[in-house]
Length: 308
Image (cartoon, rainbow, N blue to C red):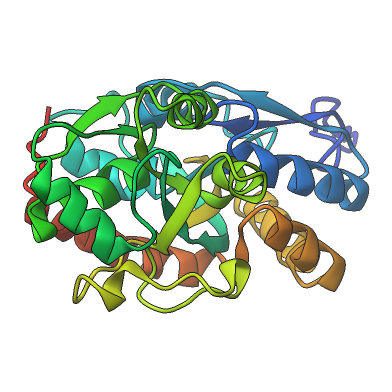
């Protein structure tokens, strides 16, 4: 009897072609900036081009659906945040994707502080002065938001401090920040990458950070929690692939991502755009995600945000 011939359809070793890295926010956002650093570094380690594909809109839902429906072969990676996987399930009555069943966690990359910033025309220099000013002008101030962290942090402050701010929703953080700079919408809780260039140039004033403790990324800026007891809204960033992606591929991506994040040069690059590298592998990240689901649900309920 003749021996069976090897299958001609066997898949070649992974990866053997370019990889798409999908981002749920616009070019210039913190997550886009993170993805571009990772794409370059992962591309070198994997020996393939990694192309960043920004698909902003609907608080990340457009990108999430695209990734969820992509072939689970390791050639589509989702670089996303708590917006799509921790907050959206509590912000919307129904979602066109399932953040648990349709995705496989690869690695948490970092956490990132957001900052309360205002147009320089507001006569305030601290969170306490801002609260007093907003209370004395109840209903007159608006805030911009373009992500779940921005929205939830602003509404948490709104509720806890009794400010009476009105929210204005944007598709992308960079555009929202430009309107804060112009004074059209004078307040925003913004990510470091979006806000810091304008802070440095004096186009906006930073009053506080959203993390419970001070951040080394914005030395000298106090936490909002020093004025509003218990305030803590911390965003995270991580990598996912579509559910059903072969385990060896997930493990390879996790291994290379964690290796990239162990580089002091990469840590420094990410710090410049507002990320505090804090990596977790697939199993630890999965456990973290379970806790974050509950954490963001409580934040949203306590802020009085009703699901749409």
